[in-house]
Amino acid sequence: MSRTRRTAEGRGRLGSVLSGIAVALGCVLFLGGFAWGAVLYQPYAVPTGSMTPTIGSGDRVLAQRIDGDEVRRGDVVVFEQSTWGDMPMVKRVVGIGGDKIACCEDGKLTVNGKEVAEPYLPKGQDAAATGIPTTTVPKGRLFLLGDERSGSLDSSVHLDDGTHGSVPRGAVKARVDAVAWPMDKFGMLERPEGFADMPGGLSEPGPLRLVVSAIVVGMALVLGGAAYGPVARLVGRGRGRSRAREAAAGVG
Image (tube, rainbow, N blue to C red; front, side, top):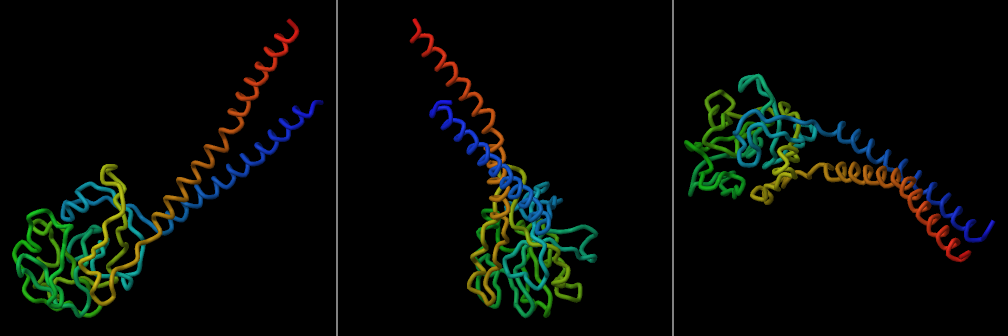
């Protein structure tokens, strides 16, 4: 057996081992990413356009399961409140317990007397359709508004329900991190920087990017490792034919 042939066989065995490792690692990342995502996140279909343009009617979102105590101002949350309806709803938290909410001075929402920049609102729309008198959010509760203020059945239309339009923190089921569908809107929600300087700051985004990265890298490793064998055989056959032609030419 020639040295060249032994070297080629050694490389082939090493390539097979590495491809097997790549496939195994890819499976772990791919399946682990899906399992991790399934534990942390839940998909929701948004039934109305009350969060337009951030989230449209019929959009699919990925929401991280969280406890209501983790909610911060600016979060877009999924919640259930029987007095508002019998289905999960999606709104933006603009006030927490103790906050004074009012609208509108210069067309802007104020929280504890401070105007809040809300670039996520539809262009040309004020921060409230009919105005919100100064309202104190009860302790342990949240004040929520839709980004499409003119058509959202949110805290602003429930001000006379005895709790100043608020919902309990315990009503929150999840925090929306990203839009998953349609594809032209796919991506993480923008950070609500208008609330960043308020006590408590903004919530930390969930590990969705890591989950997606694990799935994508895992899939690439599986496909790349699985492709090694067929590619190596094609290359080997090509080299074999080249050697055969060289040998034939030498004999002639």
